Image 1 (cartoon, rainbow, N blue to C red):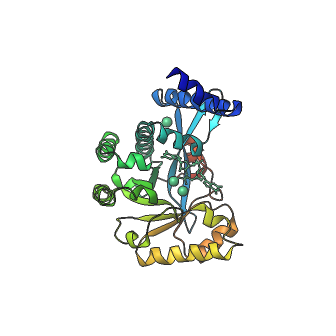
Image 2 (image 1 turned 180 degrees about the horizontal axis):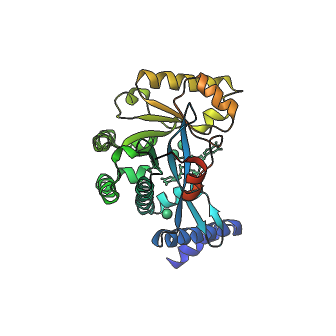
Image 3 (image 1 turned 90 degrees about the vertical axis):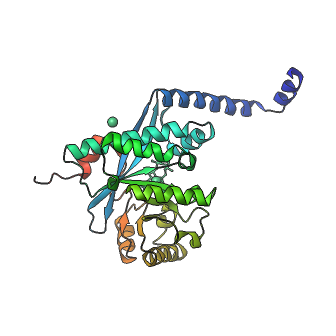
Length: 280
Ligand code: C2E
Ligand code: CA
Ligand code: CA
Ligand code: CA
């Protein structure tokens, strides 16, 4: 075994060794962060065509002592690979619902607003997902109608029948369901009509070049028209400028999220920047 180990080892170049050392180090740090809950949630506003707040998306942040902020785009795939995503996802659910409960109590969160929470395909496919969701709702006494789960198209690929049953059970609780990054995955349009989905989030890659790329504009139009026919809401992601917002309004998009309305912010800053005191 030692022999073959050495032979395998010899195939690596030094820079590959450095890359795998860095990865191992990151794995260790992620284990440590998960065990000690060293994460934070940021919140990004979601708005309607009038510019009014309709909810927020909870976005995970990991600040490593040495490396500073590490992007979720980087560490979520790693967490999925090394089996930490279920624990992390449960923490996210717990933290986001605890935050909504606090804000509801303080009168800072309207009961009609929704907190969007990202759910990894691996997390969704766990048998424990539904019981965990129910337990979290009960623990925090948060109305199910305040919660929106964002799942991706690829979540549904694995086991269609089981996924559909689970989605229906989530809907029966009163929790909303959104398809995240819509247009980038592999879901078939045929399936869309049989899914208990409340909202499609048009991926920001289609929104970015909306003003200059005619095919992106055509796609956005088509998605909105199709969603309307299926009685599904549409939220456009990555709305960065007023011209983007204006064009999307012309397309009769329902809801909007992006830097134009506000960047993800820590809880206190989210309230200070985006929630205006209403007279009680
Ligand atoms: P996502 O779910 O598509 O989240 C939207 C991403 O776009 C966020 O990046 C957000 O900060 C960014 N964004 C928002 N508005 C704009 C805009 O106007 N322009 C541009 N260029 N970007 C904008 P973030 O926070 O870095 O998250 C990246 C991805 O990591 C998320 O993409 C999601 O897939 C994943 N993620 C984040 N939090 C969680 C979580 O709690 N659980 C899971 N499973 N995944 C998460
Ligand atoms: Ca907190
Ligand atoms: Ca999302
Ligand atoms: Ca997205």
